[in-house]
Figure 1 (cartoon, helix red, strand yellow):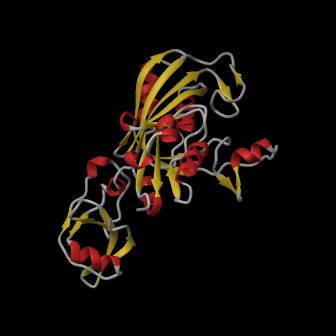
Figure 2: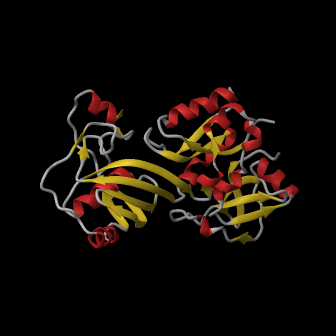
Length: 300
């Protein structure tokens, strides 16, 4: 049986997300591997991999909210927005109070406009932004709307500040911390970042890179249902499972999904068809009073 499922990896700092993908891909050889939510080399924490036909669930995992703990240094700045590039410390900047910082943090909650850092993997006219920077090109980064669910000040001991953020896909924590500093009249660089969770995938449950490189990957695979916990559920028996496998429609009563897993708005015209053994059989969509398969997954 070809591998099918998800891997929750605790990416260490100092390696790229692509490096970890390559490690997993080498071990699985011809099996397709995908991942969601690239982490910068400086960052560590949850990096979710999708294996085999589960790669078709990438958009569903991307919809989950993410939780981060980031550390910043105030009254310091760098071209990259973190400690990877040279740091300068402008003089004459104010020392904000915790109350001022917490008030400014409250103003950054909700749907906000954010400018991603130029040192990022975003494509600008077909080329990654950091590649354009390194080539000496001058360009303007496009802004985007991102969703900040919460932004809390965990610790503040000037110039060090530690933040916990829950946010939607596409948010740059570097930019968020810099925007927070700007709101209180100063500047900042990010010194550390850890992704604590992606929806139901928690750092406490993640496997180390060393284990991914050396232990049995099959034993670490998580069920594909974790990618669609927020979708309504349609429980299907063996006959309905067979019909879905042949592209045929089925009927049944829809159950509510798990909203507590945290995700962006869900398209309620989709449901997860779950076999009686608990496996994800298909993503289904309604048509002519029945549910038809949109994406079908292995029966075993």
